[in-house]
Image 1: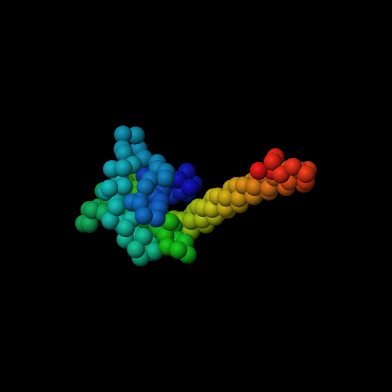
Image 2: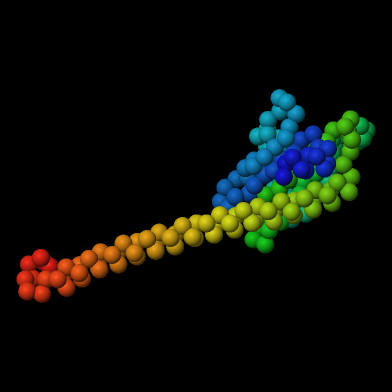
Length: 168
């Protein structure tokens, strides 16, 4: 997801942030210039990510306000939509000296975020299904073991008609 978004947008910085239930947002993937930290960037853009998660709306920002376009940074945030609520968000930015994001890039990141959310949803569904299969397999193994033990007891009872001692 990070590689494809970076390639499509030409972004200098990109974060894939997942919003796991009951936990604070965590970085699932990133692409940053050398020497920059993903956690630092996450802290800097946390309010924008929170807004995207709350509203479900992608945003394009240019800043600082009043600066020449070549001196501004273009920033995009797109939530990863899911029926139960956003799974997280994608953040991308680009300095004005490297280009500028516009509405077309916002729409592109929004589409990519929707595709990423669908893929992540399938991974979560597959994981839940694997857990369910493992649980059912354990139940089958436990039931088979209980049935085997019962069969052994019944076999002993069946062969001990004259003397009840071995049964007890």
